[in-house]
Length: 239
Image (tube, rainbow, N blue to C red; front, side, top):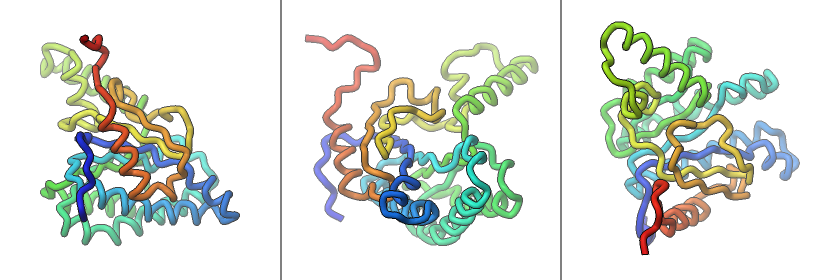
């Protein structure tokens, strides 16, 4: 691949992958087809992210709220996740992609839990890209989980001071930089309970493109937009 000329790349991209159902509706297809084609977008975006040497990519794949969707749709989503892991594992191993999961794995069927943990273990030493997939994820639940663990450890004398760094260590993203850049597809203007602590100073980019259509050109355009922005982290611009 000829690396595009982008002046400044983020170190951590987070994506709210939205619009599979609406894409299918516009195409007069079943919602399942939207999810299936959406996986092709996942494959392409992961590949490009690695090619660009962006070290962290976090994809919002399945929220805690998604369990309330129709049973058939949930079953299909879980099946597609299993197929994705099976088909992509050889690529992950070949390209040095490490899988991590943000969320509550215990919510998933035992067989799928085992498959996910196996892929996590097998890719644990890979270092070219850390691919985080948010599964059964809730930003508020993540913060509650962190607070409970901090209270417990503080009570046992393991924590002397609670500050931002302390909280960071207890989040699912412990040890990672916060996302520099958050992309949301399909035009919705909300965070949807995603990485609420971590995106405090993240640059946000919203595109009307539905996720199944979000491919190389759209991704590179988004990254170009990031490179044009000036990140001030709340500071006053000088001059």
